[in-house]
Image (cartoon, rainbow, N blue to C red; front, side):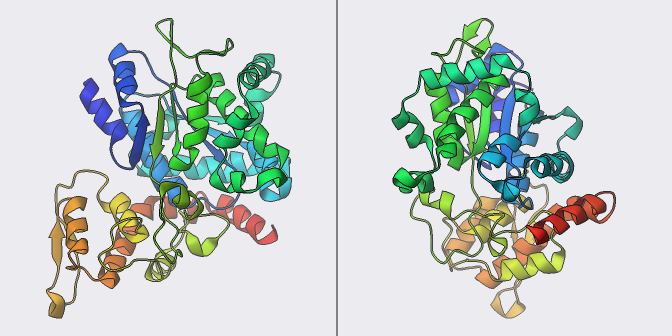
Length: 372
């Protein structure tokens, strides 16, 4: 696979931004084996934003010859009081439900789960003096203003009432990037500030500097799109506002979970925000795109419509479908039906896993969610 094809795979949908594209091309041209990293807090059910969108990009990176790492951020989750702040429980969920779900989704997205490295945060930190020297070296090169600016918009709005743990969080994320040797830190666009922080201090710290052929480099940040919440009532005004209006595990009506059944998927999408002709920040269009148009189609996608409204429409690309919706040729109800059926098909391998070999793991997670 040549550099341009590798670049195309890494930067295609659902990728939204690369910091920077020229640096990424340079890394690929070096021929050096590149490492990736994406981190996840451990809390409730995995929804399709975390599952399909994130893992689609992990599979793309793997196909492009990059070595992927999924970081199970148990300490970060504990700092953020996830699962009631029960660290033992967080670790148990990370090792069971999260690992099993991610492995199956990667496989469904065309990747090889056996080629993905899973790292638990507390295992990375345990008896690792070099990590803590690295962290201290990072904070020596940061100001309080740097860290506050790297927080989410919600955190910055909290003013002086912000928990001190939130200020520890960004330097930990930066240290994770370096400690894991991640040339390509990856996350949703809401992780942008933390990755910029990593880029800003990369050439200043002395411990675990990222190198290619002995040359120190900045990490190349890769950000994918966020899926808007199903239950939003208006279009987000900006990318930052979308980070507050994305699908959320803690708000079940906002999200579709990777193990939801067909009826549940249809019911949730039927109630989703989907204004006529509006293609920006439209969760139904995004669901259809990731479910049916991630790969180049060899056969047309058929969108069913009642005969009295013109009958079925066929599309070979997402762009064609989006233009048709913007032109008013597709009713929101027909778009919702098409998105639901496409998502049901895309999630079938994951759903089958959780109804079979993974049933016990899912039931344990369900019991946990009910009691928390």
